[in-house]
Image (cartoon, rainbow, N blue to C red; front, side):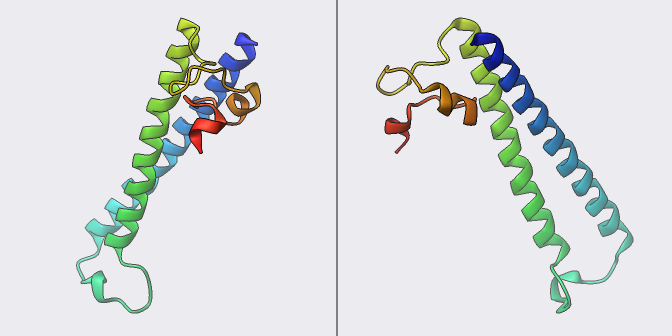
Length: 112
């Protein structure tokens, strides 16, 4: 079970890193576009402003940074043998919950 948990955590970490790379690329593209444009896009009635898009992408990026930290913490808990115990009540976390959310720190009852 530990090997499959470790594999799922590694898989989820790879997914988060891929998302981070995508958001970083989109932000770099947006930065390049912003440098080329010298007009005021904030009042463009035809679309989303660059500032709004920047804010959206940065929010998504920050969510992935937090997800990466949670995944890394899950890997550390697994290495210590503490990954399947609820941090609130101390009861076991269901394997199905850990399969769906490898970074889960609480059982489903405490998560509600």
